[in-house]
Length: 246
Ligand code: PGA
Image 1 (cartoon, rainbow, N blue to C red):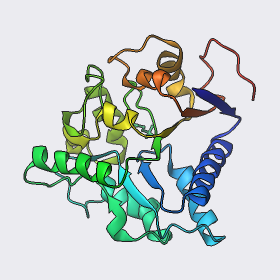
Image 2 (cartoon, protein in one colour):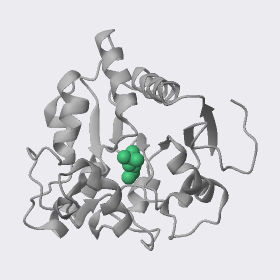
Image 3 (cartoon, rainbow, N blue to C red):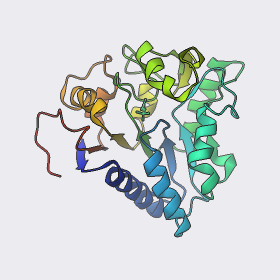
C-alpha cells in the first residue's frame, strides 16, 4: 500500500485525478471502477477540467460500485443520477460503456451475476476508485461482510443510513438495501485508489490501514492488495500511528 498525504481536499482531489489521467493516457480503453459519495466529487471536477483541456474518455468503460435498491436511475438521490450530474454529463464517455447496478432491477441475483460477468468480459477493472465509509465499508460492504463476497444485495448498516441521510429530506427516505460490488470483486481490480478526507474519517483510516485485516473493517483487506494507493488529507491522516511525509 502506498500512502500519500496532501494538505487539503483540493490537493488530494488533484492528485487522484492526475493518477486517473495518467492511467487513461497510457491505456485509452481503460476500465475504470467508480465511486459515489462526497469524497470523489473534487476528483471528478478535476477530470472534467482535464477533459476540457483534451483528456479523451471516448474509449473508457466504467463500472460503478453500488446503487440503492428501489431508486430508479432518474431519482435525484440515486447513484446513477449522481454519476451523470457529477461526471458523465461533462465528459465524452460513450453512454453504452457506462455500467451501474440497476436499483429497480426485478431479479437482483441474476443482474448481480450479469454485472460480474460483464466485468470479466471486458477484461476486469484496471483502476478502481474508492471512498471509505465511517464504518470502514468499501462499496456498500458493511462490517461483517465475508471478504470473498461478490456483487450482491446487501442491507445497509444503521451508521451508513445515518451518514447518508444528509442527502435525503428525511432519514426514513434513505433506502435500507443496496446492490454492491463484493469485496472480492473490488479486490480483483488491478489498481486501487482509495480517497479519504476530513477528521471524521481519521479513526476508521487508522483502523483500515494500520489495524488487523478483518471483515469488521472491510477496507482493511486492501492491506493485502498488490497495487493500492491511498490518498488522504492531513485531517484524515491525523490518527495514523506511523509518520508519513507530506
Ligand atoms: P463519503 O462516503 O465520500 O460521502 O464520505 C464514502 C463512502 O461511504 O464510501
